[in-house]
Length: 498
Image (cartoon, rainbow, N blue to C red; front, side):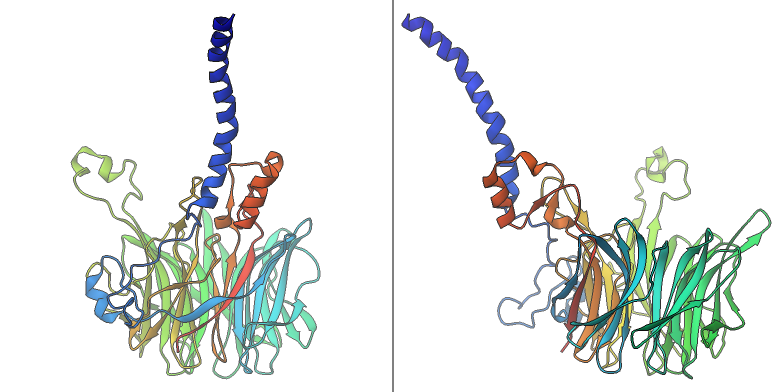
């Protein structure tokens, strides 16, 4: 009898072990990211010599020993001051406009669940604290690409593209005091989109945009600009009208000159160019490299007349080939370049100046981001009250957790003593590859970036049936296990180079 009982025990032990493993394995897998250092943040650049033993705190860029002599400490005290977040709305496309009192206006597109897109303006003080909020639009619609400029009389001029009767049109508003006056900036059956605003030296506001132009066999977008008189566009100036589309217009005043920048398709690839708008002048090519697509231009002008231009340089050696060159028998030994870089140039006295190449860094390339995605760094530029240029870019980061979450945190750099500083990341700023907004404040630079919770969430588990102890452990670690990345918020920080 005893031998029969022993045999039954031998048969049931594997079943019990299997049943136990079926409970323990999911629990261990769930607890692993809570117990191990897997917070999803990208690795920091390695420390420069002397940083740990009382040096300047600078950091060297990996693989660029020849740049160590030019290293500059990163911006000081870049930390989140305010987070505009709500589960019932998504905030994207931030725009920042400096105020004379040291504060700033912050605008964004705000999608509200069950309704649509709205444009919202938030007034901030010099510490990036919310003073007041203004609803620029009062009804939902399909809206995109807000921009803004502060008029000479202190009113805020806002423009965006909106679907009107099935066509993209330019719509605007004048915000003064809490009152909002709606403006119709375009009309017709041809799409007009992607506006940009800036003031000329005489205080006249200018509007630039992409205008669709029909042509035999199709058509393309041209870049057009016009002064605004009492909120009404004056005669338009065709800035760029190449055979391919001209896109992404941007405006900035440098000294007494108002400049317009854009990227246009030039036969084989996209190139970046700028042109004086007021007073008028000829186009000036900023990039000219047939193997690279140069996209996403950004401008910032200094009072001394210098114009800073930033853009994304994308090279795909496989583009246009039915069979990739490195897959062909004769081309397997030769590597095919695939790279994404952020470039910056300075336009001074009609000349485009690029920082000299150094080691593996190309002329004009900004060292900083360890990895960029195919969406680029979508750069943003601003000049602070001391005349220093600031550059914000997105870089690609992937978590070390088992579900390999990825996002694009924001990096910020400035120029000190003629060199770009090392980048500093705005904490909790990972999101889609959306351009940031910069504006000078009284005590630094406002940084506004789209951000969500993608680096704090996972998608492998449905927590509804998990034991309470596991839910509690996840909550204590700040981890959320869901398929949603969380609401798209705006993370606001203030950087200071002093």
